[in-house]
Image (cartoon, rainbow, N blue to C red):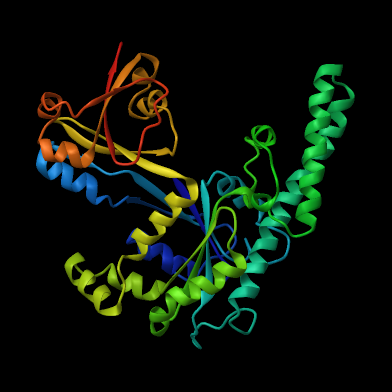
Length: 364
């Protein structure tokens, strides 16, 4: 899963990137021609850790999340959409994380001269809208030429696509992102390969002062009421504090968070909200060699989930043996779970559930 971190200049987004990836990317230096910072982190999953502590495989492998920290100005913040050099990478991200400045620091003046998170959210929304508008305009120009030379059957499909793009463009011109527009399942399939930026799930991260940590929940509710919507979530955290905590031992950091009234780390929070936004879940496979978490979309059929493990499993799928992770932990082994009759057999169409352990039987 790729999550793109974006933000206007001096928003502290690279600080947030460092906090969630335990990275040491230099802050405040982005300019033209700089590639995104990239960090890969393991998705914390206590269920897998507890299960493997009992079953004792040789190796434990958590799912990966890749964070891409995109440049601020001049890539963003000039009223014309992201710079072209960043669009391709940004479009490939599964979701976007917009870091919004809500902290005060006289040593780091805001480019606009004042702290106004609502203004900055609206500004970034317009940047992404401009990018999608530009893409639609270019696509319509090509389609207009192509449709004229199409055969009747193909021409109808091209005309439907043009009509849809014109409707979406009209919505964008009214400052309505694609994720908030009405799009049918058939239309969504038509748009599947386009990778529109305003159609991607969006996590708004309010980068707040350390002294405002106690007000984080209240701030989230306020901003969620104004900016929340389909596939949009809000989180408030102090990027500077979270980055400092990554330098401590985990036990010390946990004690500090408890003293501050924080129930989880910034990394855990952002991953959890990102999974929720994308409709993602994890299933597990466990054998003597490895216990591993696999990320899939909610509702994924067992045969497709098997393909995440290995393509041969999807092609030769016979059935899946399924058990909840807590039940397997209680039994101590899959063999014992079978003896107790706690293992179910499911077919290709069975939707794999969050936290289940799958043992795939297949033909090579």
